[in-house]
Length: 93
Image 1 (cartoon, rainbow, N blue to C red):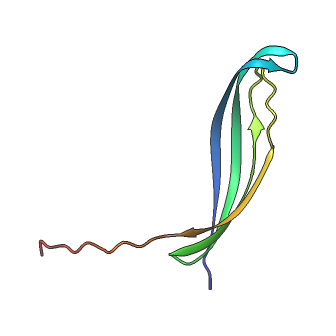
Image 2 (image 1 turned 180 degrees about the vertical axis):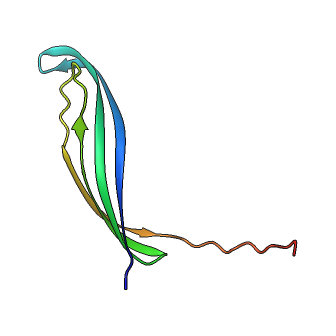
Image 3 (image 1 turned 90 degrees about the vertical axis):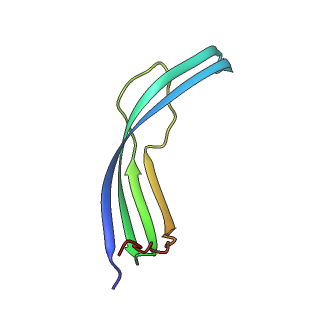
């Protein structure tokens, strides 16, 4: 049977944008956005090899002068491989 591991993560992200130039008839745009990003990760497999999937959301928690165009939802899948190392022997015995 495959062991299933699930974890809940909470990330706090800070995004800063400084733009000089012509953008939507405005010369300069800048702003800082603070985002809270909770996500849920599921892993299934063995000790050395696992498949995973991750679901998450991004919530902007502040208002700045810059209108951030961001995706509120997130989904990813992948594989994780652990490269084993040889165990060091205790030569003091």
